[in-house]
Length: 207
Image (cartoon, rainbow, N blue to C red; front, side):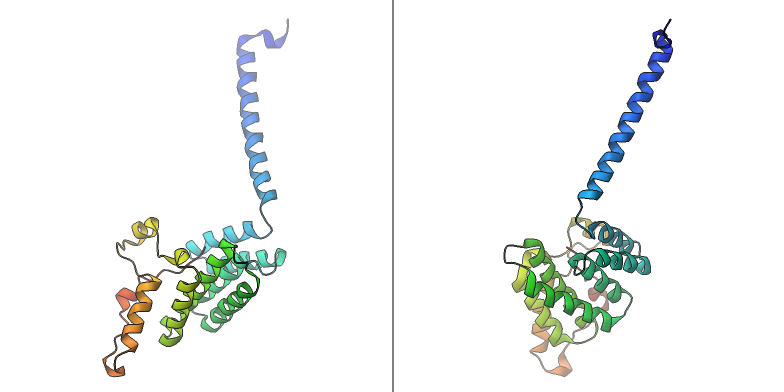
């Protein structure tokens, strides 16, 4: 008499086979996704998550790992710049944003929507960096370049950010640029360019 003729054994065999099939399919799907991902993308996604967790040293390590396998990976360059900005390493952040802007200006094709969007984000983020450092003319110039490059990519925080940060009417590049331009047009002693509670609403851009 075959062992599989026992209904209980047969049922257990079917259940275990189904579980094994599902597990193997899941493993195959994960491996397939990883293998088909362009070099550096996986590490950049890890870095983005770590930035969200404020683990900046670990995030920087992941972005560096991405650049090791894919030099000039724009997501990794953007990630590094944001880490420097968030950890108040202003000169390094400025250099990284400038490097990314120069690289994309020379290499992003007109039909490369992701590249153009990243270029706009780099201008916007460097503008925020200048803005926070009191370099308002430079900030305004970068905000204008960001808007000219791809305003759609920097329209402002989405609904998720609004819910997380509780900001129903968040600051945008266009709003901030218009405000700075208006303030720079009046006499220096009458300018009001820094409002801490409003400035805190600015969000960085990561395509």
